[in-house]
Image (cartoon, rainbow, N blue to C red; front, top):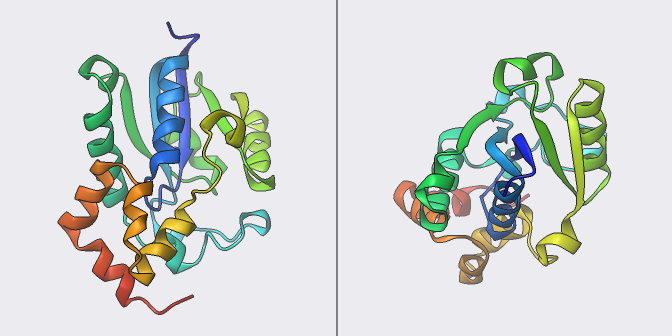
Length: 191
């Protein structure tokens, strides 16, 4: 039984991995309706943030908005029942442009933010400053996944380390294969 009416989760999902999937599944338990915001939908609109490490660099943003949407869509189709899937909307979310949020996100929704670092805390503060309710959750305590990140998965992919498949849902794997994303990543210069 959901605790809240409408919720929002967000991420770059570069790529959508099993930690992200657990984040979305946890949110489905909390909300009647769920919006998944894919941040940085347009590479030209990405802003460097002091607390956000290297997430603004091209290597960290290899996958297009549409490819990430398909990774999420396919992974959720494999994982959740149709009734749960129908509760989900996937939207672009220009995280660095607070003045645009109301165009993409329901203003009455609650943000579920997994806190892993100072950038996550900063985003939660920005959501609150814009009038959103926020629920903070310790990522490591809740997901039981401490050894996975999009950076780690991308690095494994670029090195040709097939163990990256252990860290992504089948829907993400199918999307990577469908669009030849592994070849694209391996052709990029190393960061």
